[in-house]
Image 1 (cartoon, rainbow, N blue to C red):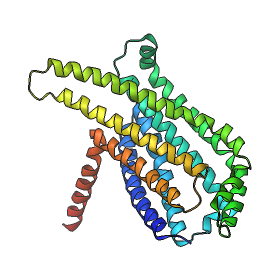
Image 2: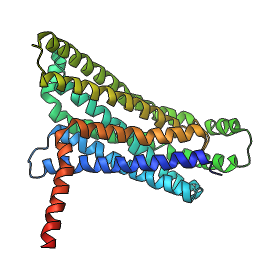
Image 3: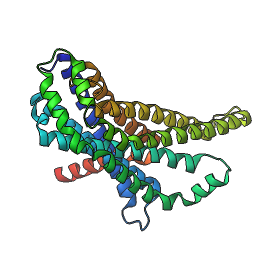
Image 4: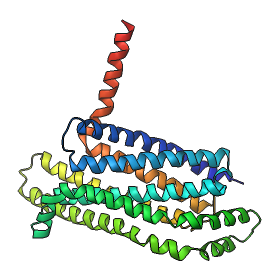
Amino acid sequence: MMTSFALLCLSIAIIESMAGILGNGIILAASSLSCIGSKTWPPYDIIVISLSSSRFIVQSWNTLDYFMNIFYENFFYKENLLTAAKIMFTFLSYSSLWFGAWLSVFYCIKVASFTQSFFIWLKLRIARLVPWMLLTSWLCSFTAAIPFTWDVYSVHENITALSSMTNTSAWTTTRKDNLGLLILICNAGIGMPLILSVVSSVLLIWSLWIHTRRMQNNASGFRDPSLEAHMKAIKSVCSFLFLYIIYFICVLFILFNIFSPLSNGEMICVVLMAACPTAHTLVLIWSNPKFQQLPPRIWHHINCHGRTACM
């Protein structure tokens, strides 16, 4: 039986996910429009399109999942549907983590001002490496999702048995006795995008901070737009890193069933998993004028058509 706290958390998650769907739709449309008619797509747009597409799909999928949990609580606990849901969620969540990590790496390579030879080599070749980076991400995400094809049946049995249990630790113990080792081995590589994101974000923050301090020392007392831009970039990168780490932890908690179904711990993870990608999307829109300009342009276009139709 779903508690009032679980119902409240799912309702909040639905609102957050729908906001994320709208935000990712804006980013996807703006990036796609800038690429239409271009012979070569900018590497930044390729990464952003991949990231926003995966988030758009996973947040749409999660919204459907939340609605089904509210109105048809046991619907997704059928074996075939639970298998598809687990595989889809794993693949899309891991893809989103990888694309977010590559976006941090791209920012670091393009913006940071390090003079090491390897860093300069990456800066010159990043455009050609981006398609291979994204392809590797898809393959790693698919590989990580495969073990859930077999292990999901044990999850179904445990969820079914949970209703007659009073001691939830028995559910956790039964869950870990099956193919947990196989899943752990296949998902060990998911730590790589976290490492990439943390290292690249820390390096970028360090480089921007050093450059900002130099600009502050040379400032003449007037408001410097370049200095403000650097401070804005530091805030954006810090928020990216913070949201990324929270989302990463919540995904692992959900995938490995650390909490029992519909418990307070799982519901908090659900809310955070919906909030972090949405917040990251809003920060992306806030930090990029191209994304900010699209909604006013669409609104202006709608108003123009509306006035023409009325005449």
